[in-house]
Image 1: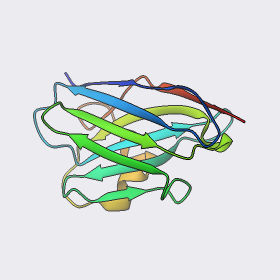
Image 2: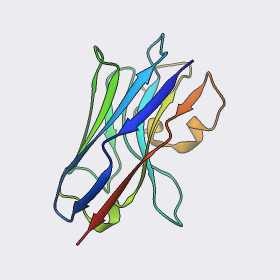
Image 3: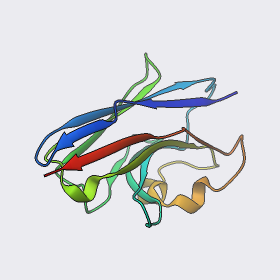
Image 4: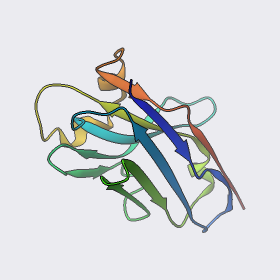
Length: 134
């Protein structure tokens, strides 16, 4: 059974940095997409950054140039380095994996609807909270 466990959230000041980690277990094949999403209070869940199975990396416009997604396949861990944090980055951050046919999904990996499936087609972590203060 696939499990995704996020860590690294916490409090940071505006302009500061945090690095989130997502430890994956039970994955026996390459995910179509490995992604980070976030959901702020009262807002819809949005895709933040993703790596697809062709190693294409995409970011939401709101985080381009500030966030960096990476993965360590040896450790089965996905990371999100967040620099120059702003108040608008305050949210619950989720790691997600999608398993669908095809490859090279690119920006499709940022769309929540592709993760609205039950296992074995999509998995979510429990989330880690990020609070940015001025």
